[in-house]
Amino acid sequence: MSKIIQVRLRESGKILSFHAQEFNLKAGEKVIVEGDRGEAFGEVISPQSFALREDRRGKPIKKIRRIASPEDNKRLKENKVKEAEALQACLKKIEEREMPMKLVDAEYSFDRSRITFYFTAEERVDFRELVKDLAHLFKARIEMRQIGVRDEARRLGGYGCCGRSLCCATFLKEFEPVTIRMAKEQRLSLDPSKVSGTCGRLLCCLTYECKTYREMGKKLPKERTKVVTEQGEGEIVDLNILKQTVTVKLSEGQKIEVPVEKITRSRPQKKKKESTPARRQEPKSRPK
Image (spheres, rainbow, N blue to C red):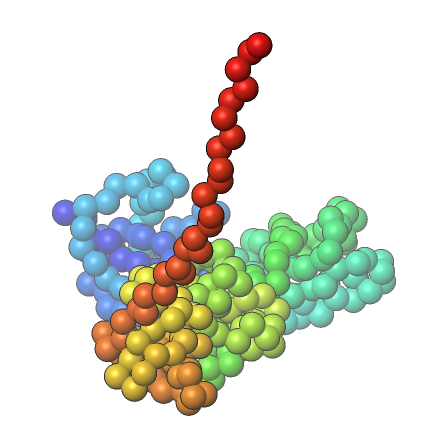
């Protein structure tokens, strides 16, 4: 059985699996791993032990090379300083060329052989000349990567309306589709300012409990359903899915909250059929 360690890469923020080899690692430890283009710096998220030969992409599992040393941590800090300098230099070049793009972040590879610049733009941008300028300036391989607004929020970080760090910048691995229907099923306000995140898109957390709300909502009757309670007949005007209660408006206008198991649906009264006089059948005329 191979010992597999879950590591969050510093460069991309993704959580990938690595062979721990002989290292006995714990969550939170900093390590140097095999990257796609050289070494990469990462943090152990959860050490696990299970049989695994290939990752999700069908490629062999890479290995952890070593535990991060004080020299590695020092290089990481130096890279962050250089990234800030690279960001300002790239911003200056973009302004000089008046390019329709918004620079978000700059990131050095751990060995400083590559610099990746992340940007957003409404349309496709021709940045070939910009790459030449930056390659000549930094003497390194330059990559320009266009990202969306959700990825922008992930890279910049921040706090959500809940007061906690953004999910995308902490533990969220991949973005899942979020729809306004999820907010409706959880009976949340449809005000965009209340169901949107810092990125301007619908909150990622709408997907967390959507399945639970959907299953529990099936146990409740729909609004405007006529029901009978201990206090009389009325109509359902509101639902509380988590409490499994309904708000009933009685015929007198009073509203009461009742558990769903204490209501019964009222049977609609059958309309009496009006009797119609029988039609008089005329005798058929006989041929002469």
